Structure formats: C-alpha cells, structure tokens
Image (tube, rainbow, N blue to C red; front, side, top):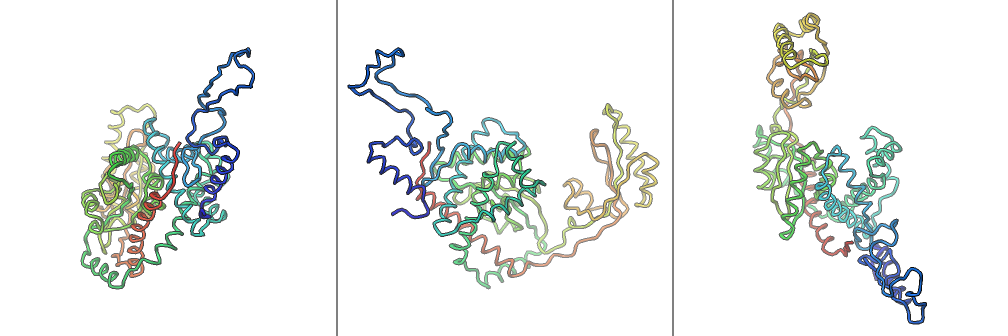
Length: 463
C-alpha cells in the first residue's frame, strides 16, 4: 500500500497494471520516462507496404519526438513531474536577479543546480503532505503579494512582469509553498525535540560579557551539500556562483535559490555572530574578511560554504557607524562634453572654495558664491552610506567637511557635518533571544540530516 502522500505515484502504478492487462506497457506516452524511439513492425496479413506509393520500409524506427508540443519530464520525484518549463521559469528568476548578465556556459551550470533545488523542494512538499501539512492557497497568495510589494508592484502587474522575464507567478508560488511547508514541518517534527537549557543560555551571556568590545560580524552563507563523489562539481558550482555575485549578482537572491541551509528563506542571513561561534573553517575566513567581501568555497561538514560579510560591529559596545548625522551637501555638475582636464580644473577650484567653510552656517553662502547646489540631509545613519564615506565621516567633528568626491558623470560634491547624535552602548541580548538563536542553529543541523535522508529514500527518475 503506497502512502497517501504520493498520489501521483499510486496513479502510475494503477496505470501500469492496466497497461499490462491490455498489452500496452508503453502506450501511455506521458508515463514512459526513458522511451526515446518506438519500433513498429507490420503483421503478416497486413497490406504490403512495399506496394504503397510512399515505399515505406517494412521495419521502421521513429526518431525524435512524435509530437513537438509534448514536453518530456526532466525528472520525476516520487511520481511528481518536474518539466523543463519548471526549470526554465525558476532559472529566469535567478537571471533576472542577476541583471540578465549570464553566459551560456553559466546558464547550463545554473540549470543543473536549479533542477537539484526543485527536486529538494518537491521532497520537502511531499514530506510535509505525508505529515498532513498542506499550505492553503490563501496563505501562498498573501506571501506572493508581499513579494510583489517588495518589487513595488501589484500582484497583477507582478504577474505580467514575470512573464516578460520568462518566468511565472506559479513558479514563485511553488517556491513559497515549499518554504512554508518545510518550515512548518520542521516546527512540528524537529523543533519540539530541541532542548536548550538555562545553563547554556547563561553560558552564552557570560561569554558575551567577557567578550565586550570584541568584534562580531553579520554573516550571509550559501551552503551546498557535497559527497566525496561530487565534491569537485559542487566546488565548481560554488565558484561560478561567487563569480556571478562579484559581477553584480544579488547574494540574497542566490542564497534563496541555491543554499540548502534553512536560512535560504531569509537570503542566507545568519545574523550577528562572533567568529569564534562559527565552525573553525568558517571562523578563520570571517576574521580575515572586510565588510562587503565574499569568500569561498570553504570546505565544511557535509559540503561547502560561501560566506559574505554584510556588516561588523563591537560586542556590547556603541558603534560609531550607528550615529545619526545632519549633513549639508554641496555639489557642482559638469556640462556635457566637459573634458577630463576641464573637470579637474573646476574640481580643484571647488575644493579650494569649500576649504573656507567654517561650519554649516557658511555652507549656503559659499555654495551660492561658487554656483553649487546645496541640499540638507537630516537623520542620515553613517552605516547606510558607502563604505568609503563611512570611514571618513566617523572621524569628522561638527562643522568639518569631507574631501571632494564624485566623477565627471555625477559631478563633484562635499558633505558638511552639521550635527551628530551618537548611539547608546548596546546591551546584551536577552535570554529569550539567545535561546531562540541556539534553537535555530540546532534545528538547522537536524534539517540538513532530514533532507539528506529524504533524498536517499526518494525514487527519482531523470529524462
């Protein structure tokens, strides 16, 4: 008796038994996975085909597809069909997130990884269904609306946008269903059996207090599982992902599509951690990386990881990059056709003029004299500015200006610090926050093992 979780597999078994009864073992084309060619022969009492005007052979093999409108399955996962269209539409999401800049070779590699992801996604949905977990269409639609809102579009406009990119709403909704189903399954089957004691939480608090002033990082991770047999191929895939991100691709988008950790749903964000809290191989890399850098592939337990340093701060200490600034911006632009020499001369004159600024009270006067545009900016967090400006502004006092910066295209500008509100010292996370983090780490480990077992027991047929 097959489990109710796999209705499509049961349907195939019934179809096959019926086909055997009528001698039609491969007549149901939609159920024949590996059939490529069909051989036909003419019965002895049939009309002699040699006498027909077409002069057809008595033994004939049909090569290729008999119906060009029929798309064969790319894979069957416990009876569920994953088509080439499914792969193409999910791949289009990645290419869109990457600005459409993907080579043909990289596209082929991404297709392989996307198929793996779709297989895992299917296994997760099937396992959830086997545990009587089904995500309601209304819940999926609500999540889809939130995704559309992130793109500043209505659901209908987002549907149309996806179609222009070669994807579809169904593809995103399938991914949403997989994430929600897997998350709910983990909460039911794993999370209740994860225990974190008060002593463990107290130990973490003590370590945080002892580490006050030391550095912690906000890390993003893309985890790809690997075996000794496919390790080289997974490493090659990881390197290609890194290359695409370095060329402007979104780390969060790649993490969401490719990472096999439970943090994939949040773009691979591990949150704030001290390097020593990470596995040794990841801790070493995190210690050596700067904000905005990406590293990998790094061999870790059961696979490889790609790390991305989103931010850094001091443990339980006020971070000057959390300061709120009031700024005045003075800017001059270059007319079209301005040469590099002309721009340099004008920028030098601008730099000499802004040196006269002694506080924000003179900024408007100097700006008017040199023909610069002056704009006020209040409540600007240093952390939200480009890294080069962060390093300059954290060390400036009220009334001081940055060095001139810009380009021929964007013009040249300076920032004048008119006010600064320094951040308060950070407090230690409370016991509930620490317990939640420890529980999440343990759930994530169990989830990897759970998915590995599902892959091992699955019946997967490839076309």
